[in-house]
Image 1 (cartoon, rainbow, N blue to C red):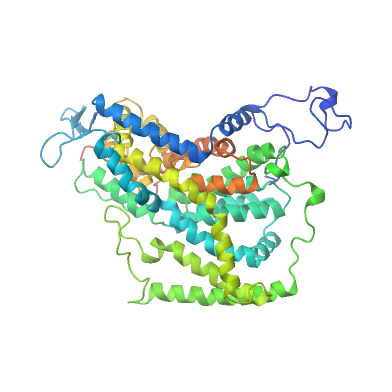
Image 2: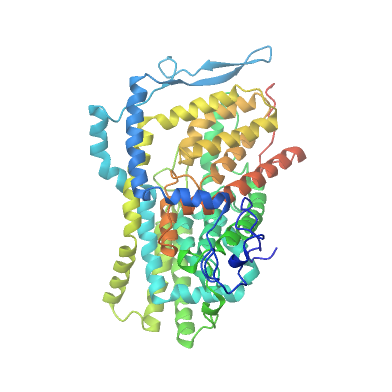
Length: 574
């Protein structure tokens, strides 16, 4: 597959323009109804409609404010109308039938999820008293600020520029997109660092190649977000999900053990399949569509404006790069020593546990501050060697400029944090998850239909409950035992959940990092809004969903284990 955008309409739903009036054709020098030949063409079709409709909405910060008010009002209505959802679990009868029975709490009473009003005196006090803490505890905020400090220095001293030249020299142009999608997928090993580090780098690479920087951001972000649960390595996500799955499985079988490696083979295969799917989507949908957008709105540069000699590295740059490489080796050596030597700072597990008593290596838990040192120290050395940094004031100035550029991120983060915190505090997210899960559980579907339906439910609720662990904490006690009773293994339920949780990450406003992605897009296209983001990323959701569902159905058909100690089936008759 070529990595260049394929010729054709901007998206599959666009009308055929081959029969346009002669005055609108590109080879006609006479301006017609469509404007002069070099005027940017409007993007049509379904995705164009999505973009235009979305961009007519208020500013994203205003949208989150409106969403916060809506959740507050809905929580009060839910309390006034006494809405509730009773938690139930499936139980096998001796005759083989399955019935749903109430879940009992520690006091022996049925567990009922009820809403919490945010408009009564207690709720309003919570909102006012937690306004600052919601903002300060917003997951991406600290990661973004720390990560972008290091990247900002690297960019301003020119280190990122020379590294991009090296990347373009050794990576064939035809493989630029799959390389970026693959890098995005693999970044999940560093938890959420890929959301911050990779999109601006991808934009620079595509711009240097004369291609749409928006397409670069889209390709790498699809790998980071929609390909989150694929990887060639065991990540921190694996033991966490395995713990939740095991708790759900022990509702049926109190001796059942779920291994952190139970989805490993499937994750490896998914890495390559999703890389190819991302490559196809970028070339066939995203770049084809953006090829008709002006450079000022994120489209590709005209051939005459693409800088020549992009791959040339000057003598000063080469010397600085050697010094930076030597410094990088030294810093990495210190980090590795701190990880492997007993008693050193990064050896062992993190004292704070991620979720549900799951132990995570210290260095994995704190990958972002480590990346800061790995980036900023070589950058300072490079800057000093090439003459960009002459004293400490130059270094401080570059960091100040980096923070100044992050002002839009900080504003968006404040309003997004309030919306997400209110939705969680209201309990409406858990009520919706319980109601949807139990409805699906009571439907009579074949195994393949149940797996696909579970993926669909997860996709839908991922639009409202952004946290992967919080959502699975609600889903696992319902779906894992329910599917075990019809012969589906807990490991297969977990794999299906990971698909549904991934593919809608790139279009849900409750993905906290989506607001950060929007800021990166606005750096390329100041007119970009939520419509631009959703219309650009929606093709990845469609394609990834189809491809990943086909993969898991093929896996079930072939009877392959999902990983080490990862069976597909469970025999409910023990």
